[in-house]
Amino acid sequence: MPVDLHKEIKKAVKHFWKTRETQKSKQEKIGKKDQGARGSVTGGAQLDGFINLTKKLLINEGIPENSIYLKSRITLPGFFRPTKEWDLLVVHDSNLIASLEFKSHIGPSFGNNFNNRTEEALGNATDLWTAYRESVFLESIRPWLGFFLILEDHPESRASVTAKEPHFPVMEEFKDSSYARRYELFCHRLIRERLYDAACLILSDRTDGKKGAFSEPSSLINFETFAASLTAKANAYMKFHR
Image 1 (tube, rainbow, N blue to C red):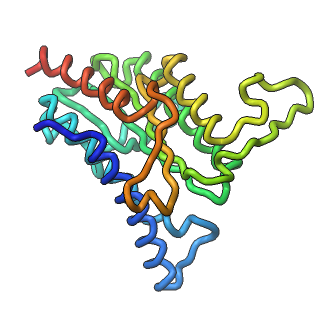
Image 2: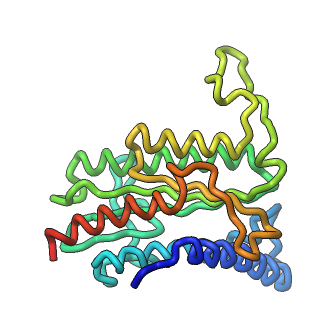
């Protein structure tokens, strides 16, 4: 069944913001208000719209539904740690086909959380590829690895940020760059350094986002390119493993 990708992304963006709002309201009503914006994220499920869209695209390419794991059996062994839970796994006939991570970054804290998100993504990739090299996934083909992030489109995420340079100068492209720009550079470099097969960055503000509004800073890391890379992997695999 053909997928209207732009329409489906808008639905996923709407789901993201409305689910966050609902979860935050529920926690506040029962007296479990978390610090900062954490109350709207501890319930999970905000990114289910994007995860389920990705599942639909995989099924369209012939991946059996029972080979796609979202909520359970999403744990993989690691090399530097015993295990890691992913957001979506594709495992078919004992082959690890794909592993995907879906993340969000919402204000008010952009500085510390930017470092947390980037360090986590780098660590996850390093762990998975080292585990693959060491045959932790047995005789699996080379898996496809994807990183997705939705960032709040906010004056503070688009504002210039001064980088500290107490000993050595930072790279020129990071000087006075915003967090939105830093994420864009980060996603590009994840792909160029072959740490991830594809990365996607979507920006959306919390007001218009409830209507499905979003933007994508680069065609190299938009959802269409992300999906095309993943579905090409799925199609190629299923062509020879039906």
